[in-house]
Length: 155
Image (cartoon, rainbow, N blue to C red; front, side, top):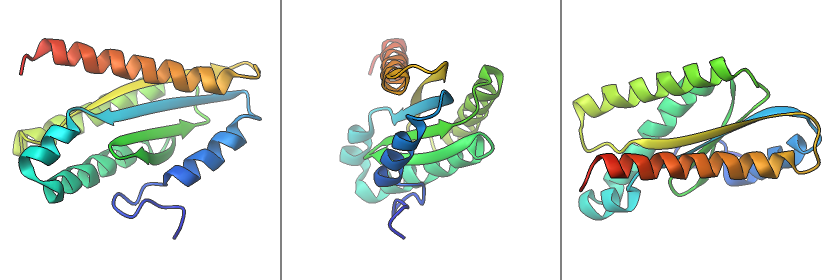
């Protein structure tokens, strides 16, 4: 199937780009971006098979937390995205909270499992470049969260 990512079974980059094009015509949607913290370190330290297992597991948790809200994609090596018609911030934050709790449960069993940094943005109102702005804003928020977490632990 050329719409799915082989490893994670989430939708792939090509599917994501197709959906982005479709969303350009819509005026209410949300973008949630996620990125695995220190993934290169995981691969270097524990090997790619372990890194792949982590990605698969994290993708499952993303899917489980967000399937009611939107469509989940793997858009890069260690990057995930959810595109959604849901613009209710409470629903989005509840799904993010669920995801965080699920990851913590997983880390209780295996502390080596990395965490995800997330960022999100809601678009409502028909502006030509709303989509691009939303993706950039979500990205910025995700990197700010990642930096904050890095500051909290000094490794």
